Image 1 (tube, rainbow, N blue to C red):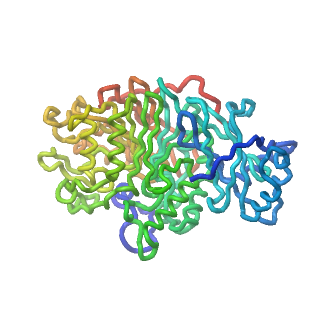
Image 2 (image 1 turned 120 degrees about the vertical axis):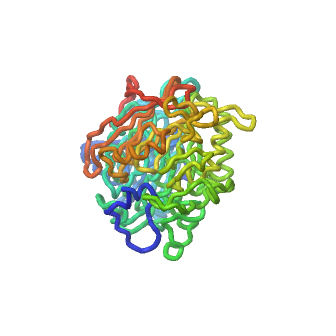
Image 3 (image 1 turned 60 degrees about the horizontal axis):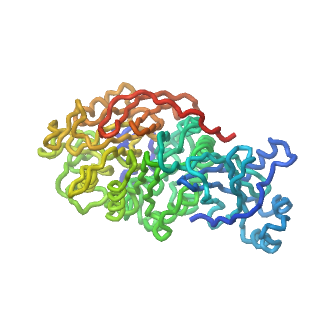
Amino acid sequence: MGRPTNVKPVRTGTSRREFFKRSAGGAALVVAATPLAPLGSASASTAERAGAAVFQHGVASGDPLQDRVILWTRVTPRPESAPDASDNREEDREAHDVRHDGDQDDDRRNGKVMVHFVVALDPQFKRLVTRGHVKTGAERDHTVKVDVSGLRPDTTYYYQFSALGASSAIGRTKTLPRGEAQHLRMAVVSCSNFAYGHFNAYRQIAQRADLDMVVHLGDYIYEYGNGQYGDVRPCEPAHEIVTLADYRQRHAQYKADADSQAMHRQHPLIAIWDDHETANNAWKDGAENHQNATEGAWPERVQAALQAYYEWMPVRVTNPANLRRNNRAFAFGNLVDLIMLEERLGGRSQQLEGSIPTPLGMGFMQTGAFADPSRQLLGSDEEAWLFDKLRTSTAKWKVLGQGVMFAQLKLKGAPNALGGGVFFNSDQWDGYQPARNRVYDVIKGANGGKPVNNVVVLTGDIHSAWAADLTQDPNNPEPSLGGYNPLTGEGSLAVEFVGTSVTSPGVSDPTGAVANSLKPANPHFKHIDLDKRGYMLIDATPQRCVCEFWQLDTVAAISNVQMLGAVVEVRDGLNRLQPSAITSPKANPAKLAP
C-alpha cells in the first residue's frame, strides 16, 4: 500500500506516519447580575463585525452532565493603543458590579479581560437561566472556560459571551438526561487534519438539529508542518509544532475554521485525544515523531501540548495533578454509559516492531514480547477503572469511546491454536493482545464475574470505516471452542464501529478491491470502506444501537454533498452485528442557534 506520494518529510530519520495512515483548569466562575452587552443601536452588520473581531475563534460547549456543561470561547485582545469600548458600557457603572476603577486599571496593566456570559432557554435570551463574568488573560491564551452548573437534565440551552464592547455568536448546548432515556443520537468523528482538506463533515453535523452531542475520538489537531502530511491548506505555524506557543497557534487555526465553529456552536462536544494532539504514535515515554536531540524532552512537549489542549478544548480537567489522566465517563440516563478512554500518555507501553516481512511492512505474531502480559495500553490504574465501569454499569448500552482499533486485523488468518496468523499494526490493540484479553475476560464474566452484555466500541485513528463482531478467535469456526461463526455471528462478545476520518487520507480503493482482499483473513468484519471521508451517526434505543456511515463527496473543496455508505446495528442482548436501515431523526428538536 505504501506511503502517500504527497507527504514531504523535511528531515531524515524514522518514519513519521502511523501504519495505516501511511497506506494511501479553567478560570474560576464568578456569578454576577451583570447583563450581556446589547447590540444597542448599531446595525447588525456592525455588531457582527465587532463580535467577529473579538471572538475570532467562535464559541463551544462540551462535557455535558445532567446538571452542568462547559462553555468555551476565546477573546482576541485589542492592541494596547486601541480604546477599550467596554470601559463605557453601562454594566461597568452598575453599583452591584464588584469591580472598581482600580481593579479595571490593574486588569489593563496585567493584560486581563473581563468576559461576560449569559445562558437562556431560548435564542432570544428572554427566558434567562444564569449569567456571570470571568477574567481571562495571556496566562491561558485569553481562552475562557465556564463550568455552568444548576441546569436541568435533558434540556437545550443557548448561550453567548461578551467582552470589549462586542458580543459573540450565540451557541447552543444540551445537558444529559437523568433516569429513563429512550433515544440517543450522536455524531462521531476523528482525524481532522486541517492540511488535508476542508471540514465538510463538521458542516454536515452542524446542520443536524436533533443530535444530543458530538463525540471526537482523537486527532483533533495534527502536529505536522507544511507539506509534511497534506497540502490542501497551509499550516499555522508553518513548522511542526513543539512548544506551547506552537500548539496554541495550531489550535487557534483549527478553531478559526468556519465549519469547525459551526459544529461547536450547535452541539456539545465530548472529546478524547489520540496521538497527534501531541505527536504521532505517542506512548507514555515518547513518540515515533519526537526526537529528544532536536525537539527537547518528551515530558516538556507533552506538558505544552496538554496545556494548550485544555485551554482550547471545551473539556474538564479530570486530574489537575496529572493532566495525562483524561479518562472519564458520561451517563446518558439509563440508556448509555459512554466511557472515554485515554490510550496514549497515561500508561501505554512502547509499540513493538514486527519481524515478518509483508507487503504492508513488518508484520508480527502473538509470540515473544507481543505475548508479555506486563505490557499496557491503558495502564493498570485506568484498566482497573474501566473494568469497574463495565461491571457496575446498569445502562442498557456500555459504549467505549477510544482511539485505536480493538478488533483483530490480520494479513494472514489462523485460529489462535495455530498461532493466530499474521498481524500488521502494532499501534492498535493487536500490539497489546494480553491487555485486550483482560478486557475480554471482564466482558465474558471470567473469574466469578457476571458477563457484560451490550458493549459497543467506537474507534477512530485508522482513516477508514469498519464494523466488526468482536471475538478473541475470529478464524476458529467453532463457537463451542471459543471460536466464531461468521455466518451467524455466534461467538461474538461485543461489537465495534470504526469511523473514517474527517479529512485525513485512507487507502485509494474506489472499487473496494483492497477491502475485499482483507475479508478472507478477517471474517468478523461486516463492513470495510477504505476510501471515503466522513463521520458516523449513532442512534441508540433500548432495543438496538445503529451505526450509519455517512460519506462526503470530497474534502479537497468546500462541499455540501454527503451520501449514506452503510447501516449496521446490534440488537439488545445479541452482541453481534446485522444489516440495518437508516434511522429517523428525533421529532421536534430544539431550534439550531441562529
